[in-house]
Image (cartoon, rainbow, N blue to C red; front, side, top):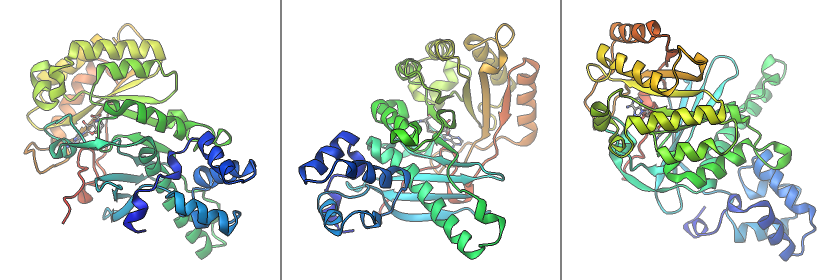
Length: 380
Ligand code: SAH
């Protein structure tokens, strides 16, 4: 790919109608649009030349006018345990984003994708916040990360099948099962593009989408209140996670500065309304930082926030879940992950109050692919 091509539009930016109009203008029959759409979204090809049932002439026209996608991989890293990998992509304007693929025992495979290059929210403990904001991603730049991860899985799967044609592996269908918008950026600060991307991910394959179940997709927000309110009206089954990290405004102002704009009282009210409107369970995210937000006082403050949002003593208790993760290290923040005994004491307070909670296992720390560690590397 040369630089010239970076300035061409991407096929993934086209709606189905736009693609059909383009093909009609070239004098192609109507069914071509469906054919190409299938290559783009269901077959998930790596190049226009792989669209083998199109004439060479049409492939040439497509390649002269469009690029297939906008993500150029510049680096792939794999964690030492082999379960997590991370890609650094360069975008046409030179900005860079990261995407993480996590595989689990069993069939679960989760892609953690970015919604912005950089982030303007400035959370002190997050590497993306520390690098600042570059720009919003387009909808296609968001869902292409999913297509990319799916394509890598499919290629590997085919390789395995060829190598072990008689083994059970040949029956495996290695595709992504889950997508979380927990990579770089604040999804609700790029609301419309994120919603468009999520629609395309969750639309059924026969509707032209990628066919991921909406319940398998999670959007994580720093707590932009208008975003939570709009999201409640979208009417889908997509999951919502809210990054809480502190149970008092005093502490949250420091860790998550946007709290000065949307304090806990407004955040809990919007989250409560969201749960009532959607009847969907929400999770509160909490990065456990030794001596900062893992104290017994903060645990009680968290119980308070939970009760203000959705009181487990009076309502169905499974509607709000606290998801903790020991802090991942980042260069710009010197806090440490909580030790096991402190986590146990913190959880005991939540348990005693009947607040459903779990502690997540950290992943991909050795390649800086963990939560809050994504930061496009500075160009050499
Ligand atoms: N902007 C969105 C999504 C990106 S971050 C949000 O704030 O939710 C995804 C999750 O990782 C958030 O809960 C975020 O607070 C958390 N996180 C950020 N830095 C972290 C770190 N150093 N260790 C652990 N979790 C972190």
